[in-house]
Amino acid sequence: SAPVSTIQGIKKLDPTLFTLANNHIMDHGKEGLLSTIEQLSQQRIEYVGAGENLSVASRPLILDKQGHRIGLYACAEHEFSIAGKNHHGANPIDLLEVFDHISTLKSDCDQVIVLFHGGKEYYRYPTPELQRICRKMASSGADLVVCQHSHCIGAYEKYGDGIIVYGQGNFLFDRHDDEFYQTGLLVNLKLGNKTEIDFIPIQKNGNGVKMPDSDYSTRILTDFYKRSEEIKDYEFVKSQFDEYCLKNGQYYLATLAGLGKTIRRIDKVLNRPLTRLIYSKRKLNTIQNHFECETHREIMVRYIKLLKER
Image 1 (cartoon, rainbow, N blue to C red):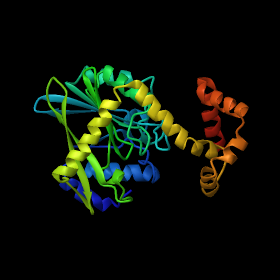
Image 2: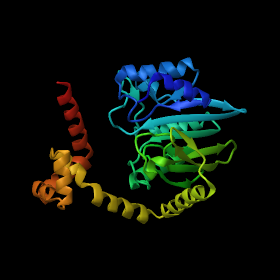
Image 3: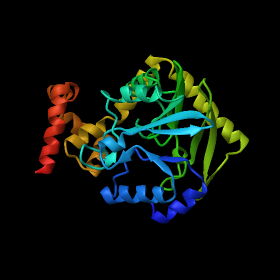
């Protein structure tokens, strides 16, 4: 969130377009989204990934650069910002539709870029499921897939004829000063029949950004390329994710049980006695079935939405 006056600073960057498909685009409701779109339109800045309804939000954008047609498609995971048939929001990823959208766009373009607001915050590797989805996007015609939700520099891989970036880091984010928020990567896509990219490290500098010095830049890229080698091994991706889940999964069970933030912290420090007391193995089996079975999950999500609407 930012005052509308910040559009003047943004305009000086001379951006070609904005992606609006993210989990915060509806933080200020319909009015906030419309205000954002109005400011971009007044400055003649294109946007993609959000709109007045699902039909508008899911529209791709095609740019002509030096006679080269570039298609851009933006989507986001389902949080609290997604568009619907009759309401504003971001374009949600739909696994029954997204690959067809990409394939259709590719048939009309030289190169396709997918901007996917997905992945786990502060986690530098793709989850096994995220990797499967992004690889399918590449197989469907995406020349470049960029995941932009993790708030940290992750890894990348070449898959088929496409390139996938799992975490671009931050550009300018003023809430935190830890390393995650201090660094990011610019991704430079070269026009041509073959997908080629360069990664350019950037560093937060007060209220702006700068190019890091040579040593820091080398360190950023060395770590990035190391992780990129690691994710070629599916067993590594799976084991890293298992380790992350064992360390952080208690949060999800605790919130489902209605435990407040303070109680959750105490429970974690004490090695989760409350969580273990609340959730017997039988209860865990039931919960797993409710989430894992497609029909049960559909019923749960719809029922909760109906309760909220009453």
